[in-house]
Image 1 (cartoon, rainbow, N blue to C red):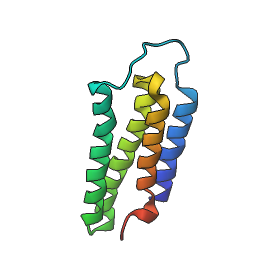
Image 2 (cartoon, rainbow, N blue to C red):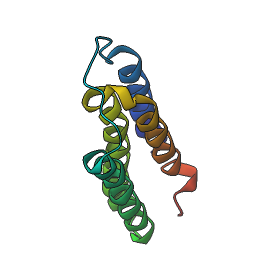
Image 3 (cartoon, one colour):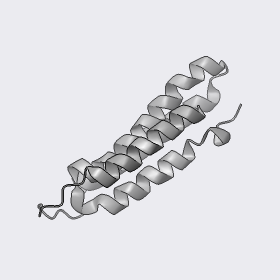
Length: 108
C-alpha cells in the first residue's frame, strides 16, 4: 500500500509542477459545473474509503483503495488540466484526499 500511495503522490506532484499551461486561459469562477467537479471526487473517495474499511480480505481491500487513490489523483489533475485558473483549490483538495488514504489511516 505504501509503495502505491507514494507512487501516486509523486506522480501528482510531478504533474502539478510540469503540466500546468502558463498561457492566458478563460477565467472561470465557481459556478455549478466547478462545484460539481469539486464535490464529485469527494463523494467517490469517501464512498471508496468506507468500502475499503468494510472489506475483510487484505488483497481484496486493495481494489477500492487504489481506486480511491486514483480519484484523489484525478481531483488534483482537474486543476492542472481542466481549470488551470483554479489550480490551487484543486491541489489542496487532492492533497486532503491523498492524506485521507494514508495506509496508516486505513483500519486493519
